[in-house]
Length: 108
Length: 108
Image (tube, rainbow over all chains, first blue to last red; front, side):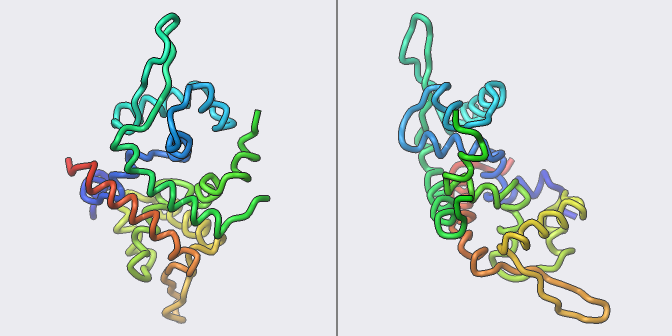
């Protein structure tokens, strides 16, 4: 029987999902796809996310070169987050989810 | 501050992610996009998934009308799973993940 690790290794969909780890990761991509955002802006648009969870997800995305941090102020240091070229190429994933959500789900 | 529930409600991407709940949900879609599969076939192609988790995800997808169950044998009753029309329209999401995974991730 194929083990999960091997299966992840062989399938590009599974490998992409290793990076796009959970709901928050997708929603961060959604929020950055139209331009850079600051930590507090992401925290606001992501509603219920805790600062620790947001930090962890941003770190994960940065380590995987999906996003980068850019300092827009030195004293005190303040950063904003933006998509890398590699991250921008995930936009079709978000666009496809959006299109499906618009057609097949409704506001409660 | 926007609450998560409201945010989910207003955004089609978030609503789509409510249905595409986790990694397994995406991988089940991947496996059904080329035709019907039996429970044990899914269990095999999903490697490490437990039968309980697979049952729960299939039930969730069935309740959301993404997949349907079709009986191919009556005695004993045996079912296979296939995408509904609504489920088939999620194929661009999987295709976009696949394309990105092929370009930006590599086998270990």
